[in-house]
Length: 255
Image 1 (tube, rainbow, N blue to C red):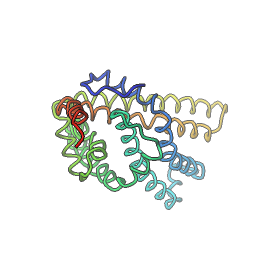
Image 2: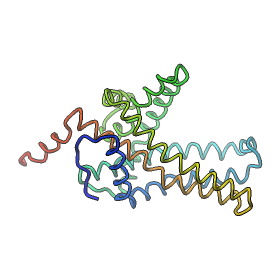
Image 3: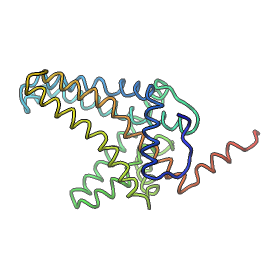
């Protein structure tokens, strides 16, 4: 796939471009997903295997806590690395998975703060009333991409920038994000159902079911952040003429 053209996209084109990027960037995205998702998935499966009941898992609270912290840190790295890879494809500067991971490491702290602050704001919005939660979700969902691509920027600065960037296009952002989440949830539900049937009929053990779900997470996980990055560039082109800005920079004579 050639580098995506920087131009305004419809909702369908956002998703189509995201699928195209997923296919063309599969190798570096898979490297990032394997590095950042394998250990939490394996630890999660292990915890389920050693716990005989829903509450028994808390008997292993130290391992549970370690897995949670590791998952949060690695998730932040995966978000940044995926964003770097997709952005590189947009700007004509392909980036290998290992390089993206190295660049992403320094943004772990700010990305965790963005995740915490955004989750609190969106969660309170849903608690107060459903509609404010939806509005906050659609307004703040680009904060991670903003933080990665517009450094230096604080966590609160990235949230404010996302809020301003999505203004006037939040329904489009919401629909795109909803479809991206649906494309993650539906396969998970199908595999979970197949796993439940397989376990109930004795075709395979619960361990195989857990492994199947874990593998699916690794493969599907990057798509959501591809959509976020595509939306980020779409809104910058629409509202700020980012495509013209790049063209002007490219055509300036060297000093």
